[in-house]
Length: 119
Image 1 (cartoon, rainbow, N blue to C red):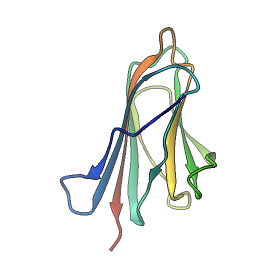
Image 2: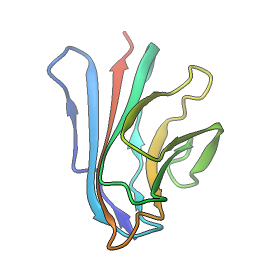
Image 3: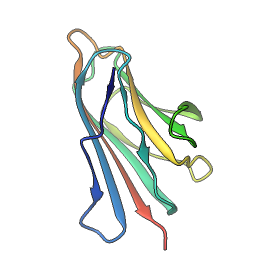
Image 4: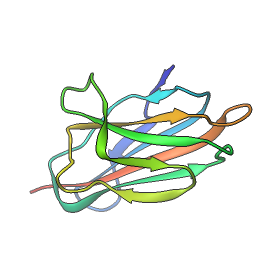
């Protein structure tokens, strides 16, 4: 089942785009793609929080066409709460979270992407 990013706005800092997916879900659920603006170096981070099951995983996937999402060459995964940075060489136009094995009864998760827009 797909779910939609609940919020995609400019954050309080100038030229900062913040996209948030909030969901209670089952295994195999995927978020809709969020467009990453043209960004400056070192400025795309992804944070995951929530109640992870014993084997719950969030995989971040990318796409350049907004339809065909694939894993990054170096997997961007969360098995517990944390923050990851998208490497400079791996900046597609779109990203989305995909969830696997959230545990009994699913999990409650928030995934937040922050990108600073270029000049």
